[in-house]
Length: 119
Image (cartoon, rainbow, N blue to C red):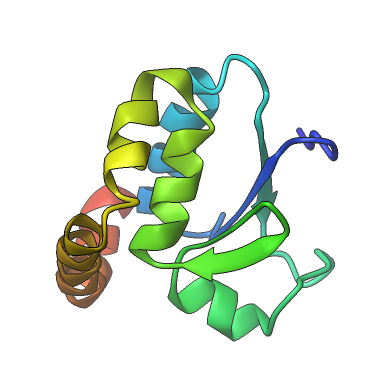
């Protein structure tokens, strides 16, 4: 389901079982349809950046600016009222720095986690 007028666009890997679960949760929380979730796993999906780049790191667009990593998660959180405080907290550079470091650790663990969630 695409909400082309949503203030935030999120590009995600629809072929990743872990990503599917996370996006399913975010869709349930996004009751106001503030986010346009775009599955970039399909070759037919138009992408604003290189598809491999979008699949390697989480990306979002907020206020016309494409961001990635922890900053992209924060943009998504700000679009969901229940997660807004976390998204606003991530605007503070030390907090965003810490979240980015945590995201980089997650990226190293992602392949193993994908295998677990694929079962």
